[in-house]
Length: 308
Ligand SMILES: NC(=O)c1ccc[n+]([C@@H]2O[C@H](COP(=O)([O-])OP(=O)(O)OC[C@H]3O[C@@H](n4cnc5c(N)ncnc54)[C@H](O)[C@@H]3O)[C@@H](O)[C@H]2O)c1
Image 1 (cartoon, rainbow, N blue to C red):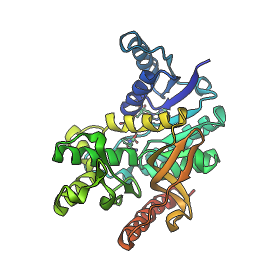
Image 2: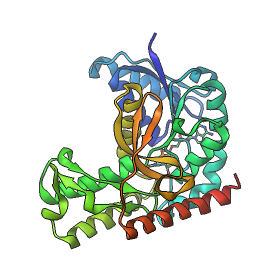
Image 3: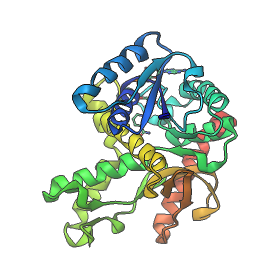
């Protein structure tokens, strides 16, 4: 019997994520959406890519949560993306209704699963899913830092003309304008970035990273980024399903780590078969710590709006 992963929301991010997961060939993929026929059509299309891309993954599309039963991991991408000029936070009231209903169904049919939240505003939606599912905190993960650090790594590699694979970066905080790039910890092949690039250039890259999503929204004009976000979610699924114990920046529910309690923010975490298996605490400079607290407060404001 093949294992099962569900992706809720068969739109841009969900379909991109499902395509990457299908190519991994370790689990069947169920694609869910409210639109009739659309997830079924995309699933059939993805299956037909199997003979060309060498995978036997059974991808199925559905509008019915019974078909998702006993999934090991569920990626939630159902939600409205932002339009030019909007912040992610502007989506909170619309997406909370969607995420609440979806989480109830997921918790009912896959009570042992690990949820990876992708819908925005990311940290608040992860908190909503934790609240609604009543899962332990290790089984609700927000995908944000994988994308944000990928953006930072891309810009550094573009600037230095090096492989993206050799660039590492640490970004903490909420997935929004208050995110905190810890640039002093960025490195290229183990060499501190500060030895390879002037401080003003590093600051400019950090700034571009923080507004990296908005840059793409402005170019696309309708919808937001989806290839890199889909890949980010698939990477976390990999680390869980293959128990890889990757250290990935993930939005996690903090219970005192970093002196923050009762809210989701992005921190480095060990991701394995049990979801978030350990939260890694990085020693921060006072100004970094203050910026992280400010970011957590911004997430808390959204949580208050949701009244959960
Ligand atoms: N965390 C991140 O880093 C990140 C990055 C990019 C996008 N996002 C967010 O991901 C979400 C999806 O973005 P997208 O570009 O794929 O949007 P999209 O509009 O292309 O797809 C969303 C899909 O969700 C479906 N949907 C809506 N309500 C549903 C429900 N109740 N049940 C099942 N499906 C439902 C829609 O029919 C649609 O197909 C947005 O909220 C966006 O802001 C997050």
